[in-house]
Every structure is written in structure tokens, then in C-alpha cells.
Amino acid sequence: MWLGCVVFLVVVELYVVLIGGGLEKDPRTGLFSPLSIAAFGVAGFVGVWLSHRTGFPAAWDARISVRDRLLYPILWGIGIGVALVAHDLVFHWTAAYKDIVGAPSFNALGPFPGPLLFYAGGAIIVEVFYRLLPIPLLLWLVSNLAMRGRYREPVFWVLAALTSLIEPGTQDLAALQRPGLEAAAITVFGVDYVLNFVQAVMFRRYGFLAAIVTRASAYVVWHVIYGNYICVC
Image 1 (cartoon, rainbow, N blue to C red):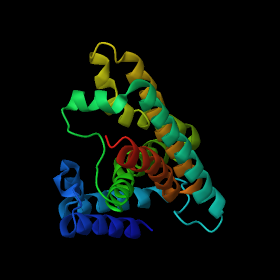
Image 2: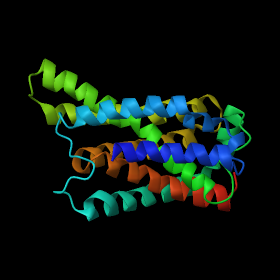
Image 3: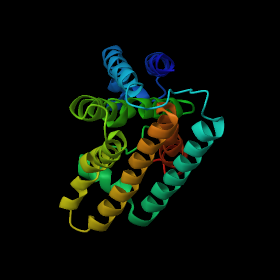
């Protein structure tokens, strides 16, 4: 299953190189370069290997129903995506963020299926460094090695809470330095934290594929449908 994810990243890179559709101008497409894909693939493989040794189910565990593995993550992702859209309509977050980072657009824009491929691949990439590698690695070091297999679940919940701070802490809090954006930054921090924490729970209960599906579903609503076709921002 992880090899399939890596192959999908290669497909995204081929789309950008051979078709482009405007995505070739986005600096974030560098994440899909062959060297980056190789690094993500190796890091993800290590995370998957460690996850099987720290109590996480396999990505397609026969004991887990399709409803649990796919339907619930999709519903959670759609709900969080709608929350992000509502936040933007109230606080105009995309415009503020573009001004903060000096970027021409908040979303990766282009004709279908470019943005869909881009953000589905992005959901795979960020999963590696937000959850798939750090949580099993730290859980293995703390619980399996230091504590000799004890307190695995309490340690997981602590790690889930802490690692869920990575994305909102590195992306959203910069807006607190801008007068008038405090409410927008704090609320989007909360939504992003919920997304990451829900993904950690999905990972623990249903495997890493469920975590990726959760984010990809949120991205479809937030970045693709709203960002690329509605606000075009």
C-alpha cells in the first residue's frame, strides 16, 4: 500500500513535467521531484515498518471494515474542509496568508485534474513528516525500548497531541504578528489542530491510509473545489 502511494507521487511528477497545466509554475511542485519522492518513500517505509511494531493496524487490515477505513475518514475530511471554507468566508484567511508570505496565490491553480492530483499527492507527503514517521518512531523509542513495551497507549495519545501542533504551529501562528489577524490565526489554528489530531486517531485505529484519506478529503473541499474553482485564490 505504501509503494502504491509512492507510485502515485511519481504520477503527479509526470503530470507536472509532461502536462503542467500551470502547476509547473508553482514552487511547491519541487516536492514531487525524483529526489524528494525517494526521500519521502524511504522515510514513509521506515514509518510503516515501525508502525507495525508499535500496535498500528496495517493500511488494509482485513479486520477493519471499508466503512471504518474510508467512509469515516472521508466524512471527517469533508467536515473539516467545510469548516476551513467557512473560516475563509468570515476572516478572508487566504488573502491575509498571501500577503504574509508574499505568494501570488494560496492554492495550486490549474485545470482538472491537476489540482486534484497535486493535493492528493500533498496529503501523502505531509503525512510522512506529521505522523507516519514521527509517531511510530517516538512511540517505539519511548514505549518499546525505554519502557519495555509498557504504557504504549498513553504515550501514543501524548504524541498525537504534540505532533498535531506541528502544522498549525509552523503555518498559522505567523499571522499573530499582524495586527487585526489574531482571531483569524487562532481559529484556523484550532481547525488545523483538529484535522491533525483526527488523522492521528485514524492512523491509530484504522491504519495510515485512513489518515491520508482524511486529509485528502479535506483538501478536495478546501483547496480544490473552493480554492481552485470557487474563490480561485
